[in-house]
Amino acid sequence: MIGLNGTSRLLKALADENRLRLLHLLAQEDLSGTELMEILNMGQSRVSTHLNLLKEVGLVVDRRHGRRSLYSIAPGPATALWDKVLAENAKSPEFQTDLAGLEALRARRQQESRSYFDRVAASFGEQILPGRTWEGLARALLQLAPRGRFADLGVGDGLLTLMLSEVASRVTAVDLSSEMLEQLRQRAARKGIENIETVQGDIEDLPLPDSSYDVVVLSQALHHAHAPERALAEAHRILVTGGRLLVIDLLAHNEEFVRGELQHVHLGFTEQALGELIERARFERITLQRAARDPQPPHFMTLVATGVKPA
Image 1 (cartoon, rainbow, N blue to C red):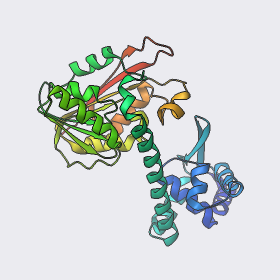
Image 2: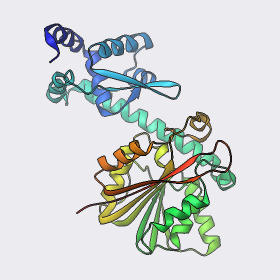
Image 3: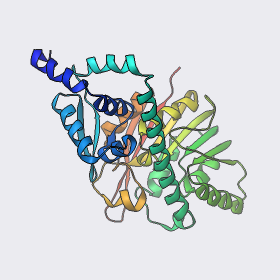
């Protein structure tokens, strides 16, 4: 119960078209104030005023994400009325226009990420990267089936892809960067490897068919995803029943430099957070362990997680 006074304030908060549009966008995904300004073509002071009012009535919460704040729909009784408003107006022209703006924002994010990886592709194999430890990779490989159809999502420098090709019947390597994929093709050709196919695409919206892979690997890729839950849902979609998921990523850390220098969206994951993400993607028999610690400062820790797609 939120009380008569609380209900009155809630109704007043919802009696504004711009605040309804803000809530509709936040129902799609967590967004920063700057991103909301971009989508709505609205000034900072107006967006801040609306967000503060929505926070006061318990409809919106915020959290720190690096140097910015991300806003999201707050769980709780105050959202019940908003849910009805959303359901009744989902097809409104204003909401549809805002969705188009959100898609434009996602496309810009994707282009910025692609540009970064295209730019560093040729030298990527020479860089010291967080979580790139042979011990971590070797332990992960031991948990994989010896043969089968593998999908490697977000290939990076391609080293793990090449290793997977030795045990897989076929490996589909997916990456947003065409240059990364070209570097992988060249390395595979030099080694005489012929069972790797490359596909350019977003790991959050895979151009791959349903139920077509025995193992899906996300190695140091999930922290680049703006919506890790979407990437895991896509992994679930393309796996066969009984297929296995392998995630290699970083334990949560505080090294902010990786956002700007390496295009990390997330500063790793805690065991609990990663386990919950995998569970929400409908995987079962989930395992989680800390696999290795980088020898170089700042000593990033590698997490390895597995799951199985149930019948």
